[in-house]
Length: 101
Image (tube, rainbow, N blue to C red; front, side):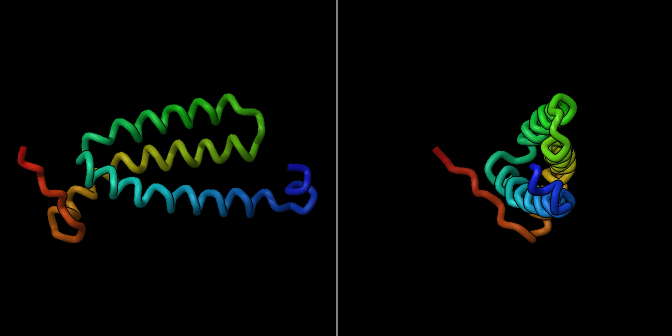
């Protein structure tokens, strides 16, 4: 962390990490809705609550910020799961066929 502060790279690290976290949540929403439907929303809620608590507890500024980004990306994903269902209904994404038997 001293290296990041010495060369003023903390902002770049937070920006890159935020980009990667948001990028990770896009396929998580798609796969979650595909395999579990909108019932997976509560997983994102739990992840958001845990991330929020960790953001408040952790004293390291960068890690705390990243936990906050993770938390609010999780909260945002709750709405995206329901939007993904609409996108599937429009035919923009494949619908999982139910297995018989």
